[in-house]
Image (cartoon, rainbow, N blue to C red; front, side, top):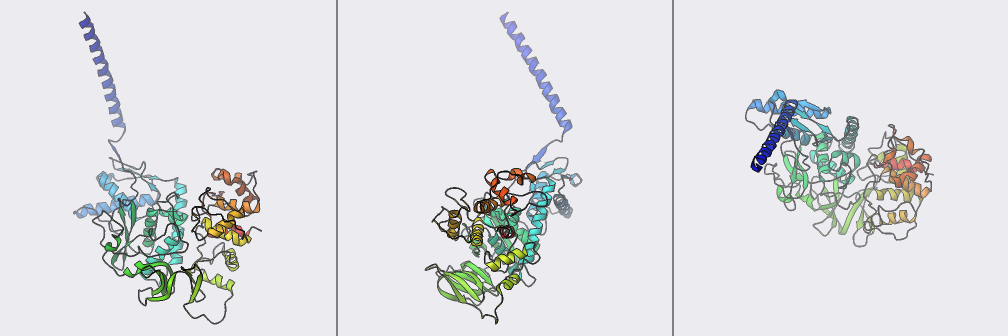
Length: 550
């Protein structure tokens, strides 16, 4: 009897399992009917771009029809990404295999770094041939970011590149611009994209490398990416007059940042030269065998002026040399260790490394007749004419509050670092009192005394008790607080702040300072009714803001 009852219970349990199994089967059938058979997605690959010829796409098939199909898919994907489409239908092409679609999409992204706004997250390819696209922000926001990047990139080309330049000159001009105007910052917003480097002024190796390609594309110079998984690093291979050269602009930008300093240790190298401290896995990368620019390896603290480069020769005890830009007429001009700083009025100014003194060496005859300094400043800046802040920039340079760069530019729309800003504040307000304040990251910094003065006079504090972060770009709210601190105009009513649509983005510690700045009319918002407190203040904005402070 006991056996029969047990058998009965087992039968009931089996029947229940059978019912559950049938229900699950029905659910699966419903799902299969309602949705495509399968879904494929890839994850973002931060530093693994393909090494292929960047101007042409060669589909990996021998059949000409398949090659043509690959090019058509490439063009369709490119157009969709440029237009910010949500998806494209590739079903008429087969539909193509998942691996082929992802390969082609990646090729599009590698060729066109200006499409920085695409995100791999939730961007999927369905077996029915539909390829979805996702973006890092809303389409309106992305459109504004695209315009910002394109306008800034075009302005860089306009101010840094001339028709008289050969291809090497163009490569050097773009290299120098990125090195001089970018701060290496792993925590920067958009650090991995050209938007972060070109617009925001901060980034990491991927940002430098994609920015280099974007700008080289604009001047018609071909380049590709080369990456190293072992190094977690990426750089460029650039084609100059038919020869391939390795180039790592990130490693040519010293960390910590050295204001105004350019070096060419990683510019236009052969594979053998690059392998001394780089390694890579890609065996199909373009071969770089030319040693034409080997002489540039010894250059540090480079100052470019007319037909010559003035530099510290690291191969000769850091003595100062000059050499023509074509590599000829190499001469030692200072027989002691020194670092060139800038050229002014026919003199090369350099720092004597034996005692720290600033000295000068005449390198060309002075022109007859003196030019009024103010008029001279108005003429030398090749990127200020027509700028909305031109008058204030001229005024501040005449007064000596701020300087331009040795390439005759002012770079009004570039960001300004915390160290650079406090230096201008000190000069503008005539601050000189010091207390010997030193942060961990300012002990050997060029602006150590300026930072000491600013802190001593209550203009600012550090980012913490130990760090000042002198080389980080200063934000609009940080600049507001510094001016508010000195003028003692903090205001806790927040009537002005509350009028902006991005009022919640103002940090709590900066609110009273920003309110004081706004209430006194020292700074304004933007036409879209935003204040952009977290955005970096530009050199032009810094000058105009301070000019309003009386």
